Structures are given as C-alpha cells and as structure tokens.
Amino acid sequence: MSKRVAVLGAGPMGLAASYELVRQGYRPVIFEADDRVGGMTAAFDFSGTSIERYYHFHCTSDSGFLQMLEELGIADKMHWIETKMAYWYRGKLQPWGNPIALLKFDGLGLVAKIRYGLFAFLCTKRNDWRPLDNVNAKEWIMRWVGTQAYEVMWERLFAYKFHHFTDNLSAAWIWSRIRRLGRSRYNLFKEKLGYLEHGSQTFLNAAAAYIEAHGGEIRLQSAVTQVHIRDGAIYAVESNGLVEEFDRVISTIPLPYVPRLIPDLPDAILDAFRSVNNIAVVCVIVKLAKPLSENFWVNINDPHMDIPGLVEYTNLQPLDHHVVYVPYYLPGDHPSFAEPDEWFNERVCGYLKTINPALTEQDIIDVRSSRYRFAQPICEPGFSQKLPSMQLPIKGLWVADTSYYYPEDRGISESIDLGRRLASMAIA
Image (cartoon, rainbow, N blue to C red; front, side):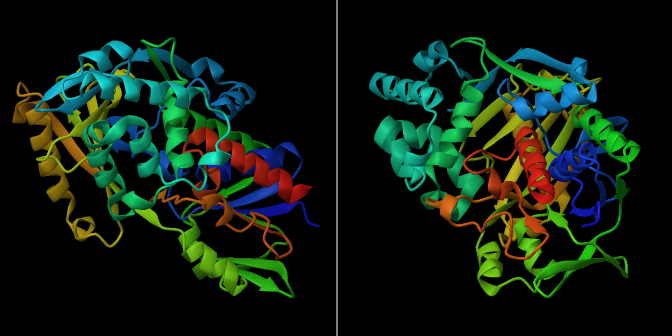
C-alpha cells in the first residue's frame, strides 16, 4: 500500500493522526475546508488580540496533550494556576467548587449540601464508567442529591445546554465531566487548571510545522466533496474538482457530514451516523476594559438569563484586556440559532452588566460571535453500543469524531489520544 494517507479535517484529532503518521514514516495529506488549521481550537483576530473562537482549558489529567507537548518540545509553554468558580444564583455571585463554598451556599438545605458533596466526592473516586453506561443521568443525579439540589444546581444548566435532550442523557457521560474537573485540584479547596502561552495556536503551529517538516501536506480551503469507494475499498478523494487516488483515508470530520461525503457506505452505517444528535453553539466573546469577576467559571441559574454559564478566560490566561466567553448551546433547528449575531451580543452584554453593575457601555471594547453547527454530540444511555467501529467494513477507511471519546467529554487531549490511535490502526 502507498505511504500516502488522506486525513479529513485539520482539527486537533486530524493533526494528531497526521503527526503519528509522519512519525511512522508515512506522508499524510490533510484536507481542511477552513482557511486555517485547528477546527474549534482555531484562533482569530479579536480587535488586536489573537484568541480562540471557543474557549479551551487543560486539566492535570490531560496526559495525551501533555505528552505531545513534550514530544514537540513546547512543554515549557504550559502553565498551571489556581482558578476560582462561582454560581450566579438568587441575583448574586456565590463562591463554588469546594466544601466551604458548598456549606455557605445560599439556596440549599443542609441535607442537600451533604448529599451533593458526597456525590461530587465519589464521582472523583470512581474509575469504572460501564455500570453507568445505560443509566439515565437526570435520574442518577436526583437519586444521589435529591430534588432540591437537582433543581438548584442542575436543572437549568441541563435545560440551556441540552434542551429537549435533557431527559435522555447517559450518566457515564455526565460523570466523566464531573470527574475530570474534580481531579484537577491541588486539594479539596483549590482547583488547578492550565493554559498554553498564546493559547492553542502554540500547539497547532508546532504540530503543523512538524507534519510538514516530515513529509506531510496540509491543504487549506480544500473541502472534500466525496470519498470514492470501488470494490469494497477506498479508491480516491475528491476535493476542489480534483479526484486523487488514495488507498487509505482517516476521517475526523463531524459524523453528520459523513453520509454526504461517503454515500457508498452500507446503509446501516449511514443510518448510525445520521442518528447521532448534536447541539450547535453560538459563542459570544466579549472584550472588557475591566474584569467581570475573579472567577474563571461561573454557572448561572437565573430565570432572566437563557445561558448555562460563562467563562472569564483571562482569569486563567492573562491578556492585555479582560475576555469573557458566553456560549449559547442550541439544537440546530432551534429558532434562536437563526438569529443574527447582534441578537446574541446585545443579550450577553446586558447579562454581564447585571452580574457586575459597575460595568458600563464604555467598558465593552468589542463583541464577536462564532458559530459551530456540530459542537457537541448528545450521548444518550447505551451510547457505547450505538456507534459503528472506527475501522469500517471498507478496506482502508477509518472514521471517528468527538462522539468516539465517549464517555469522556470533547477536549483537545481526547482528540490527540484518538487521533494517534486512528493513525496506529490505519498503518497496522
């Protein structure tokens, strides 16, 4: 077989797959529809500040990411700091994320606080997710923490992040999110998160440079229109009107695109890919002249705010100005997803001024919005049995996206682990 391998998508997963391929002596050709590498980690110019379209942070447990930084010689660009978390509830910011904050929280009774603390603690100690795979997340949480704690801490967060999917989520998937953050701590009282100097672009640049220096090729603005199959095997990739022969293809693009690009797959596989539900995101990014708060992460439970939370990114990574990310998670067919950016921007600026009344219109330097249609796969109970194998019954074809992290949540480290695994499978 040829040493040339087509890789679809230049996000972290596609770059990691290509990186592993060149390390093994192969020459990947990466096809990317965007005008830059990175996918959801790509940066843009935010009125003079280079910053990611969507926020990312790193936990001490992100071993795949940390290992690749070492291999690329940029581990010294990684920094760890103590961060704070809060809950906006009953019209005020309340500290959150440690036992003292839980005990002082205004909105829960003592029994609910004890149950919630025990639940969070045991989640960080659990290692085996399989008993939770077929368990409904909402029912699981309510059994542990009770009705009051669920309604205060989870109900609105679920409603604004998962909408009509809320009642059918996998407990294993939700547990993995709790555990990841819970294990990124100095101790019970202090949370430690990490950032790269100059953001994810530092990693993206290093990975892309390594790939190209070792025989790989990155083709930007080169959307694939079809992957051709002949006699049960990969034959060619079509992009920009050119049909080019390959005998191996690794696809890392969102699964909903796969049936259109590879229509000759067996119907059962196409149906499986089509059946994966996804949430879209409109992420509003605000540049401020003064800080909003001292917190990196703020969960929100407010009947007047239709958002699950916000991230004040510059309380993790210092920048020249204060930057806040406010994500709107919406089903792709939700009426609000069709609203113009200005609709989201105005609402968010109003929310920020509610949270911090000292903010004025003059403190808002710039506001932008980014949209991604397939931002978050929805993992229902039994999700581990839903997806086809990454090695499809077509010779030379491997397909995966963030759905295959299950039960882990989407993240750069998970992308790297899976991308390198795909590459190893493709050349085995």
